[in-house]
Amino acid sequence: MTGRHSVEKIGGTSMAATATLFDNVLIAGRSGADLYSRIFVVSAYAGMTDLLLENKKTGVPGVYGRFVADDAADGWRGAMREVHHAMHARNAAMFARDESRAEADAFVDRRIAAVTACLDDLARLRSHGRFCVKEQLMTVRELLAGVGEAHSAHSTSLLLRDRDVNAQFVDLTLWDQDDLSSLDARIGDAFADIDLTTTLPIVTGYAGCEGGMVRRYARGYTEMTFSRLAVVTGAREAIIHKEFHLSSADPKLVGEDKARKIGRTNYDVADQLANLGMEAIHPGAGRGLRQTDIPLRVRNTFDREDEGTLVTGHYVSDVPRVEIITGIRHMQALQFFEQDMVGVKGYDTAILGALERHGLWIVSKSSNANTITHYLLASADAVKKVIADLQKDYPDAAISAQPVAMVSAIGSDISRPGLVPDALRALDDAGITMIAMQHQIRNVDIQFIIDSRDFDNAVRVLHRALVEDEAEAAKDRRAA
Image (cartoon, rainbow, N blue to C red; front, side):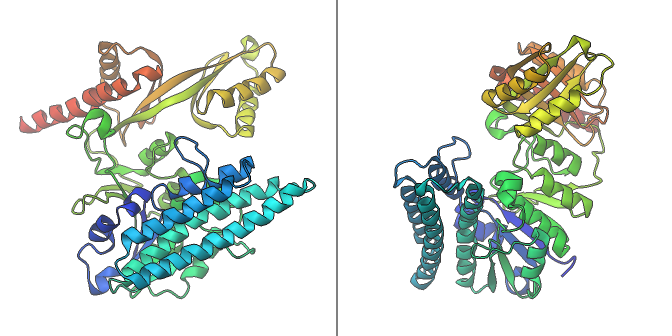
């Protein structure tokens, strides 16, 4: 099972474009043996996990959010009915054969009924007042998260079967089992008897395992399942199918005609993208692939003929250049100033401890003789709690936070002479004030800290100066 197959992950938006997915990815003109030697890890259909947990962007509560809030008695049950209806509607839109649709609907009915029964039991315990079910809420979140992936994986396997493909639904959710092993062990057990040369496994993106996938990886759990599957089964390549190319900038900001597919890059760049919260790949997922020298390919589901962008461990651009301009529109800069810090150790450790206790994501940090600044992907309210904690221990310190944005220029080698002056000139010409800047010795990224209001324009002007203009200059040099 080692080295001859690919492990491929399909995102939720691509899953929802079912006809295109089959035409461009799952079948894509293949027949016979060419259909196999692939493993697919699938996300829930777009929007389904939002209904089960909460909306990822707006925070609007789904089943989990309403159950936790213990709102009107029928609040979470109504949300569950909405999920049930959405899954049936999705099946109705996909299945041409009545028998397969009935089988898919029956599967959904069983899962929804089982999860509803669990929540009913917890709700009854909670109503007595003497029982504290707080510890069980994370288990509820894990349970609900797996429902969406089970639905999409099961339905996809049926749709493939209807097309005479020997697809096998591989359910890693363990929704009805209490004995949870490690993720690697779970994968090993599930694939022990699967012949990849004659079977096309369709695997749930959520896996029930010790430690809890949602608890450990939040909404990035599907990528962890995908990564560990590639590592454990010894895949020759890992492929992510998304609704867009991995591009030099957001096409919506710089224009479809200006954004360029990256084409080649390395895991160092992928780490920087993950650190900024980009949905390229979860940092933990990239680590496993990098350590085992498995190349990662990011493909556009809607561009069948394009091979996408290849990410490897050792690639470095032949010519120093910026590959991507991206960043974070809203973040917080936490500044800790203490005049007595000079020559004294321990301040850094205390700040990191407070940030860890409150679960805040550190994007970057800087320091000098008496000031430590952390750039955080966090809300203002969350940072206020950290400040309150630190102020108790350091009453004489001046601790403050301010909203900022970060725009990063990233590449496998950005050591081009004059790059920083070009960037600063572009920002200045556009009337964008730079609050701070960080440039690491390794020449992989430069971070520009600016006002959030300037984010869109900063991405555009830096992309024009560092990617578009440089590409034109390189073209002129080749022509000469």
